[in-house]
Length: 117
Image (cartoon, rainbow, N blue to C red; front, side, top):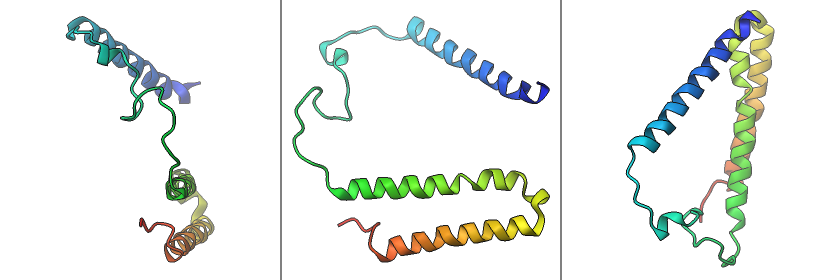
């Protein structure tokens, strides 16, 4: 249980700081309600409006590529933590993994997946 003590303390401190900020904002903040502030905010678009059109496929492609490369590179952190314990074999395996990621990135660049036109 002692190895989780740091995580528990961090969560507790985050909750205390977050609660303090909320309390201070509600006590000290100006209160000037208006009709515009009462409306929901949806990324600059008019709330509850019908869709005006379709988004280009490029948005989805860039989003999927970002998620793909982001998730793959998340594996670097745990490897960096245990890098010395894994030795040369772990280093070679991570090199092969990074080689595949870089190869996929170069392929996406050559296919023009990241070109915005």
